[in-house]
Image 1 (tube, rainbow, N blue to C red):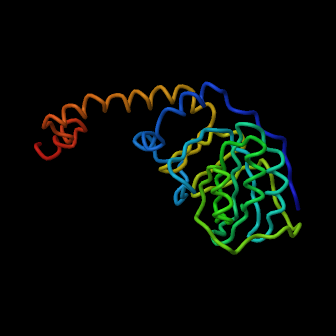
Image 2: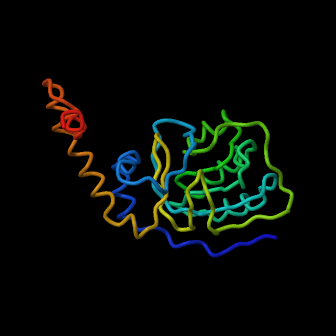
Image 3: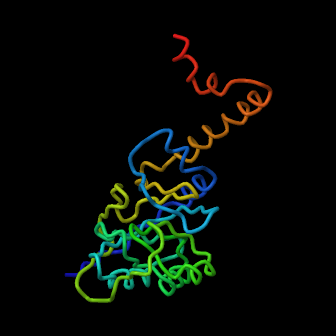
Length: 216
């Protein structure tokens, strides 16, 4: 059975602009959920913020991926749930090329990707489980587009904010992302004077608060 729901509303440009200047790991200091574990960037440095267009496929059949990639808009991120199959690739050269041609800013594949040399030439940022020559097929069995999916332990809804960099990827609801960029930037800016103190012989443990637990 195939399901295709409407394309999600794209996230506000203000959210993109604010998060684009911050690090995913800074968010990791503030929360534990929403991170897709085990995702590896296909290149570094890597950075993108965009709107999740979700796809769920069975282990072998990537029919829905080929349909979804044609729907991508500038600023979208293709997010594919392979139903726990981390060995096969559903994302190779032609699909990567199409995603970039449509204006997508990246892809997150909870499985492998393929066509390493070709896709490196396209310079399309992708996070996945790695590379594999074992691929999916166009079998016409089943698949779903723009439904809730699970990526590396994180639940992702269509229209969610995809926040990715060289360290990994996090997913946020648009509501949770409002004002988040400013908060993350303030955390990162607070480290600038700390570096100067440390360079002059100061203590990182004093700055972080770790030292007090050894002196109490």
